[in-house]
Image (cartoon, rainbow, N blue to C red; front, side, top):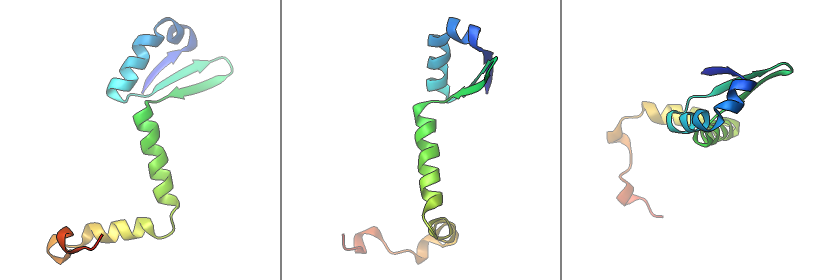
Length: 82
């Protein structure tokens, strides 16, 4: 995580945001009233999806259980009626 004060962030905002987008590296911006964190839209969407999946009762356990199953025990996708 990049740490920077608000003055330097303002000065280099374009370059810092481009780096955050390109490398998914968060920026911690410190001010006299507290700190703020800037993240890429991709990271934000990933966090939101993780929170959603975690909020569905039993889904996390189902995913973990499925990860432990052998591929040979799974149904071929061509055999599934959509």
